Length: 141
Length: 175
Length: 247
Image 1 (cartoon, rainbow over the protein chains, first blue to last red):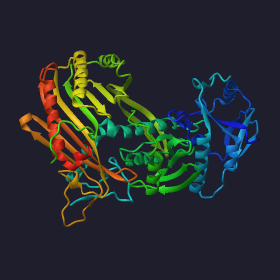
Image 2: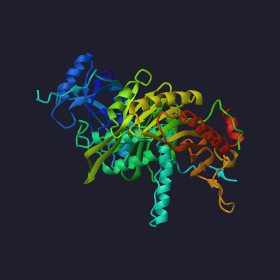
Image 3: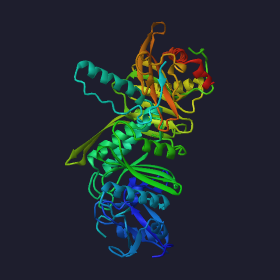
Image 4: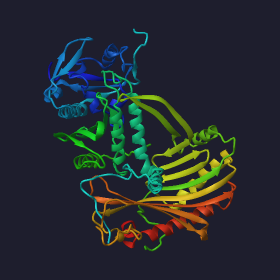
């Protein structure tokens, strides 16, 4: 992917972004408890199409009942943090995984480094909120 | 002459926990009287509401994070010990300070955010037993670290909070 | 003590409260309180319920679960954010809070009395049981100052022990038989995180316990007397040096 490409992080929790500051919080960009961050590649997509893509990420899994916002960030900003955005189209088309989070044996130091990265990314990202939350269709469609 | 001096090593506000291991009736009476005096301030909107709002936000975040996977990315549910630590930390903040935005992270620990602007922000993750993992963004510079708190806010954390909030005018009496 | 003044242009007031406690009628209604609060929408657009919440969070195996919330309705709160004015309507009390920016006693008491009359007309309480005027002040003093430079009744530390005070909290309740009133004086020392100054909270709560009908014509006069008592206590509690900072 190019530095000029854009990926987005879908936010399924009301408390993972700041309404008053109109920005994502660091925990929106934290990969915990995994070691990679799940995003979607949205370069060249119109806003409506991004929200349509968002519904593909909704499902019957825990916590994915609604999307409250998304945080768009350039691959360039991700690269500055020595991370790599790789489009894998799994589990949905345009799915992109952000890998390369520092591997450290000390869990506190690892958490501190990941937190520092997540802080920078979250503050560089552009928060976009739909008019109203995008809800999962509970019939499974 | 009595001199009021701020001690550099300990930062603790009006509502920092009062602990008593006294067993006598007198000890219990005194403990109660101190609480009465502090509760009198807590009934004030100007002095008490910022903490009340923050504690309510913590409880709301805890309710949202009660179940595994609550954030849609397989997050752990909120850790009880982290919740208790976060409550204690919030009670340590002096009443005139800016209180943070409060949420839970993917590890089940409590995240406190002061987001002044995109170039100046502080985030602290409160874990069990008073562990504080923080990251601080100040213009082009970032820093991170781990501290521990017990009866006061560590100086590094106090400096970080006052540095970030000195320019942030968000008024938390909007409760 | 400082010289008594009627008004300080930059008084260190962070909150002024006028509070009335009542004996409610047995059929006192939360709906009436709600309608009263909502009727003020034009001037107090921010409407919120007042509830005490008991959240039952249980912790098992290090995990938290919510077994239930018990929310007890207490009343309604309305606010005018721009003016810093809040009114609280509960079954057994009415409170008007003036936050910063404080204006003058005349306008604060006028607004409080007008809202009290609306409350009394709507709720028709059996009687008024307590009237109070409470002012909370924040005094900023330099680190390392002698407290007696700013307070007339600072905590006293025996000369034989170290004199540096880190914290203090005092609460004194004084009776004023001449005014048939009492006053709670609470003082506390607090340091902001930057430690460039110290802050003293001086909370003066002058109150009168009564049994009078809600439309008693003496209520405004009693508030004025309580305010006088509050002023006497304030200026008696601080030094001229303190007052000079807020003229």
